[in-house]
Structures are given as C-alpha cells and as structure tokens.
Image (cartoon, rainbow, N blue to C red; front, side, top):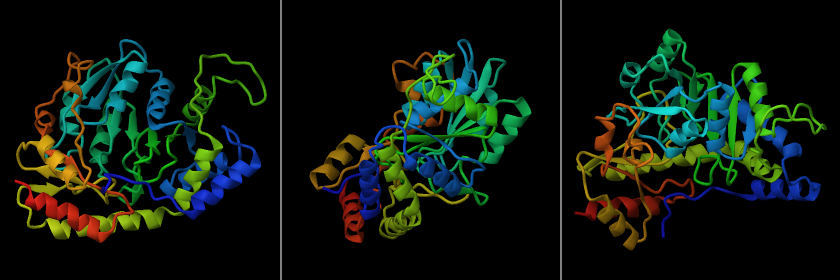
Length: 361
C-alpha cells in the first residue's frame, strides 16, 4: 500500500532520541527543548526562540488566550480549513465567523473576510493550506486598517515562503504543527511565535500551568499542561537539521506528479499563487464534482491511499448556525483529493498513482 503520508525518519532522529533517553530527561525538560525551539526559529527566520507545545491545536488555543479573546467576541476563520481552527475559537467561548476561499488556489479570500468584519471582530485565524500560501499582504493591510490581530496558522506551511520570508513572519502570532504527517514531525507537537514579547511571555506561562517562576509552585492564573517532551524535541531537532533534504524530495515529487498528470484533463494540481510552496500534500482539484468516495475506493483497492479535502466548517453540525460567507468554498465538496505526498515516495510510486487516476472513469 502506498500511504497518503509517511514521515521521513532516519539515523539522526534515532541518535538524538537515544541521547535524550540516556540523559534521563524524557519529559518537558532537557537540552533538546531549547535547541529545537531556537533552531526552528532560525529555520523560519524569527527574531527569538519559539514556544514548543504539545500539538498544533493547543498552539491555536494559547494564541487566542494570549490575545484575551473572550465570550461574545468573534474570530474570523475560513470555512474551508481543518477543524482545529474553529474548535480553538470555541475553547475560549468566542464565536467563529466563517469567510470564503478562492477557487484558484483554495486559500482564504481577503475580499470575503473584509465584508464580515464587525465591532465584535477581535482576531483573524489565517491558515496557509496544503503547503501553498495566502495572499498575505492583502490580509496584513486589512489587519492594520481595522487594528485586528492575525494568527497565522502555518501547520501545513513549513518551508513555504512569500517575498523571501517564511510564512509565520507576517502576523502577530504564528502557530505550527509537527503531527506525524507534517513536513517536519515530532509525532505530536507544535510551536508558537509571538512578535510582542509580553504576549510571548504570557503564552510561555499559560502552557506551563500558569507557573509564576521556575522552581516555584505558585500559580496565579489558570494554566494548562501544553508542554512538549524532550524526546519529541529530539526528533524535531533532527528534522530541522535535515529539512533541506526533506523539502528537496517533496519538490522533486511534485515535479514528477506534474509530468505524469499533464494529460489528465479532469483536474489540476494545486499550485501556489504566492511565493514558493512547500508542497506539503499533493492536492488534486477537479473541474467539477466527482464521486470521490468511489474514486478513493478504487485507488485503495489498487494499493494507493488517498484522502478527501477538508469538510467545510459550515457543514459540521456544531458550526452550521454560525454566521459567514461560504458561496465558493461550499462548492469544494467532492472536488478535492489529497494524493500520497511522503518524501519517501519513489518515482515508481508516483507513476503508479498517476496511472491509476488516468485509468479511473
């Protein structure tokens, strides 16, 4: 079976994990935490170390908490994205307001977002989807004009750049995910970056049970245990040191997909319209709705795992009554299919995937 994703883990990851085990520091303290936070910050070009956390969803939760998003507030979030973005808004008892996307590259629409801004709008969650990038300057202009902070969700954008800057360097807060299917992985895990140092300090405190000072047991706010382990960070550090190798493989895989799907007239591969894509996951966009369940079953029966595009938020029962604009993104259903995208793919694997797609009818 050719999996939709498989992490690229090698000898360096094993070496660092064994060093963490030998040190005895296997929980949320140890040298690999600091090294991973600083080296990942260097990778994305951030001015100070990141804040490692247990996963990408809690990264979003901490970002909203740090911005003091409260009950009655509204947070703008795309209708077409992963559910964690909307769930995190509910965690702080705020209300999600869903804005639309662009048909060309599936990214959030700044035009749709601006129409939904109200006096209750207190933040924007802006995900870069599938390794492509949003038209970030348009969103930053809106952010400055209305004085609304932006949380850049870069879970799928490790290696994605706009105007020679890595995504995550534009908004007020940036969040990353290191889940097992992400470009860089720690199994589970995430990272948060905040430009404002007071916000940075608040996030560090909240992720660590609201502890007032290291070595004390005094907590003056309700906090959370959102810490990353030293073992996870050991894997992450090795991944950062191998990132160019991993990204090069993914770029080469995309080139092979393009070559072998150029005669596939029913659909197109997602290409970023902004900057450079990391090609996190190969995304096939069909010209019109197709029976994706039948296609996925056909692929699976022939040894290829695929997955559908995200379900739009307004289709989910817990969000169906929340406001928003969804005309374009509601038409994404049964048009988007994610293909195998692991850096471990061989050319023969990609050819197999493409030939199966072309043989399906």
